[in-house]
Image (cartoon, rainbow, N blue to C red):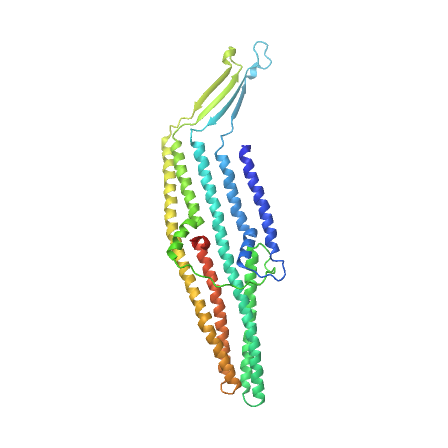
Length: 426
């Protein structure tokens, strides 16, 4: 048994040391002045610090440790008996019997038990990969949220500055009799509305901050660097290829395949239970007068007479194997569906972003420039200017929203496929 314990203890030690190192590294990235937060940084930090990862690692470690237990023989049995009436008797010597026995399962049973435990450990290992994939997608979505709320706050402040400029122009024109007092009042109302919107955005920023810090196992209000600029993402073009890649990459399918193998092994083991186990014994019995008969060796077997319970166990194992196989078939269909839906959503978000960036935003900029020039020249009214400014601000927000949505949808697509990098490799 000791030979099985050493690798497990070494593995636990390595994991503990690596987790401590990762936690320190994760904390360091938030303590450097002037840094910005990117998806890879935050994903690495969350995976190093999130308690959920420790839960599934502990489950996997327990399943690995179980392999050695399943492949080990039962403890040998030591039996000692004595004849009390022979104690101190001058006529006969002290009578006692000592026997040791070892149960040895029918050939193949230990191997099958070890294999079944190994498949279960493999499934637990794939559960770690599945959780990593889920956390990664969640974190990337939060980074997109973190980016958008910062952009929205910045757009709000820029537009407050612009509206202050419009108000000053309106006041100047009102003082010279070229505009009504209503123009300045309209600008003031819009400024107050933007100030209220800034309060709402700051509340959203704190909510996202709390969510990120919770994933990092930190206090909700701890500081996190501002986000880096989100880049445009190129979409894979072949959704069918992504679906096929997902069937090879998704850890849930690999875990289910391991469970199918475990259930097949359990079915073989149930068949082996029809065969008896062997017990080897050796003993010494001083009650025999003939000294040649005192040392004995023997062998025993259990008698598997109750075939009904063994047939029932075999039926149960076969049913569980069928259950695992049908779950795998159902999972394949669901994964194909997830990839298709995630791909369509990501492609739509990318098209929306391109529409706002290349067409609607330039038009909104031209519109407000023209409205401002017309108002300053006395050719346009202030309401048109305010409407143009609100339209541009809304278009700016929707452009950034579309970019953030694209990153959210790509994160969903990556989670559905398992890994976009591996899926698009030639």
